[in-house]
Image (cartoon, rainbow, N blue to C red; front, side, top):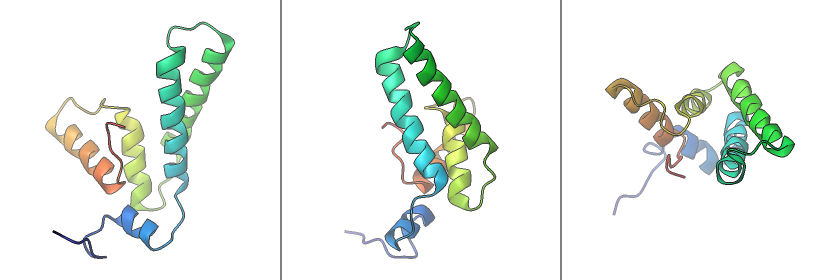
Length: 112
């Protein structure tokens, strides 16, 4: 059994293990992921004001992520995760590799 040490932990996991609080983009990602899941399971195809408001909220979170100036490597990883949007970065080996790196670096399961 391999034990992770400080030198083998991804940077984001190491920061969390050392007691650092979640980055702004990690928090935004969680909100975006929850809102997107809610929209995809309940609101797709709805022409209700609630569905439109939820969609607009998701779009605003995506704009915030895109406009965010990365302060650390984890921020860049989350910007890539937002850009991937559940598998959009799949046209080339390089896109898939970049997305895979970002998910692994941020300790995020892309299938959640």
